[in-house]
Length: 178
Image (cartoon, rainbow, N blue to C red):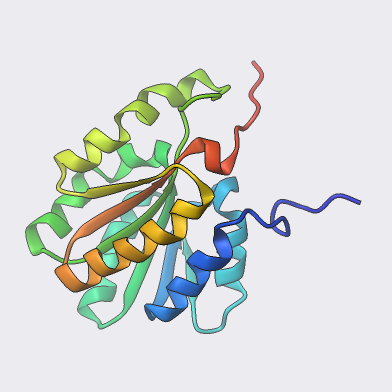
């Protein structure tokens, strides 16, 4: 009997979840993505972590700012294709020097089967950096937790917007047919 993606050990969700707990992150906002399923399920099953499903990724930037003002630490989880939806909102953490911690599952990289994912997949890092977001690229499953730990410190200790970009080779390639 095969396991569902939510049950399968992806090699990075559990250590990232532990870091979420250690850092006192109690709000996780997301436009769900299959690559984030295991982590989001772990957070949803924790009574100390509130998971909010967003209509658009930009809402997560505003919620991160509001949470920070209220003394709460948050994490925004999204797929790279949603990066285009938060460009204007990223002016807020840049201007206010407030933390905006993001975990981004990448699409449009090597092995991508959906041609519509390529333009934003190629532009994510440049778009984020143009808006003052520091990007850390996790190219292996072992990199994800290490870089996420660094991102937590950068965001909450220094009031920075930081995105950990999880390479498509880490989360796997989705099939696509016309």
